[in-house]
Image 1 (cartoon, rainbow, N blue to C red):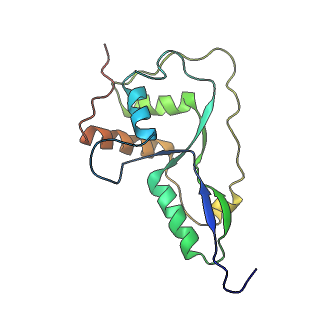
Image 2 (cartoon, one colour):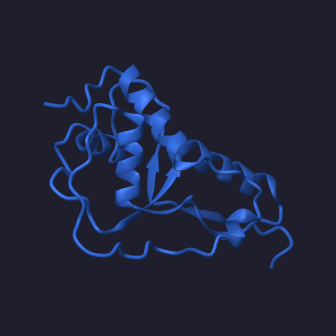
Length: 153
């Protein structure tokens, strides 16, 4: 390693959720898709027997800052809280938003969610929010933007 070589830290996130930083309409890839789920326009027939790796946007920012501040940090880090089964994700939505009704459950046994070794990520010392906190804050943000979500018939 060269004495004055720059450090490179790479965060590898998947689905990034939470309040949108920039003003204006809901944008990006994740938030419009989640709005469609909450409105019953997507993922509305059967819960997928799969999982999704999620991180709160605020936690991802804290991981980036921790990498910058920790002079020993370098390389790749999993920028995810963990991989949650879709059944758990949609149940949290249902708990956080009483007007949302998750679709029917898939048949059979739940597939094992993707597993990660978080040793490196945890070495940065950032406490990540639980999924429910992220989803409650996300729903509050969407409602503050006037997004009409999950009107039950």
